[in-house]
Amino acid sequence: MTQLSVRIGCLGGGAMGEAILQGLLRSQIVSAERLWVSDIRPERLTALREKYGIKVCERNQELIKAVDVLILAIKPQSLAEVLQDIGQQVSSQQLVISIAAGIGLDFLQRFFPANTPLIRVMPNTPALIGEGVSALALGQFAGPEHEAVGRQIFGALGQVVVVAEQMMDGVTGLSGSGPAYVFLFLEALTDAGVRVGLSRDLALTMATQTVIGAARLVQVTGQHPAVLKDMVTSPGGTTIAGLHVLEEGKMRGTLISAVVAATERSKELSKK
Image (cartoon, rainbow, N blue to C red; front, side):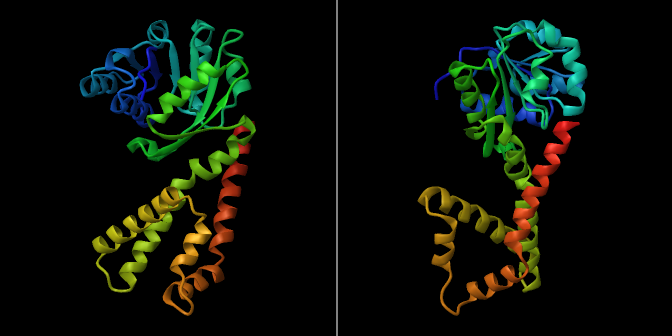
């Protein structure tokens, strides 16, 4: 992977902020000397500096002056207050990337100087181990060179897709909330193993690897999930008996409804 020559600052050193910093260092596309982080908790800054050897700033203004790319990794409910304080100190030559869920580009743009390039990103929690998927929506003044930087940064956390901003609520409903659906499915699959006599540890191990293996099979083969499902389903066999129960329980429709509900909730939060 090509190394980035830009200096990157993460405003916020929480779980996702750390995941970004860790991913950049793990992928070796940015050296520790080119990474900055600010946070309101001094003890958090100390921990990040000692763990990764990056530069830390107690004041957001100090961070802004030091970097070419500013990543906003703070909670959505705190974002407006922070941007009110620092927005006009950002240069239109800097790239600003926001991972705040539900905060639109138009809202963000009003805090910064005219022509500031912005990118809105929706990552998901598997980014913590480099297995996430991040959707990027480009602001009005973000060009191909800014997209390339965004792709490299979030490529360090997993896969990257670029979408129109109006698709971000759907992205939130599917990939943003999706890990929780998978965890619930995995928990239920484990409980099912216990119900039929397996130890809980064995059931969890087998259920986890089954989910990982099935997902990887889709990725590696490029086959549609329906085709792979049919490969496992013998006439009159065990799998079709289980699938029959799942269809009776409307699992397919329930999952679709869950994604739709999460998408609608994302739209409501965006309006607020």
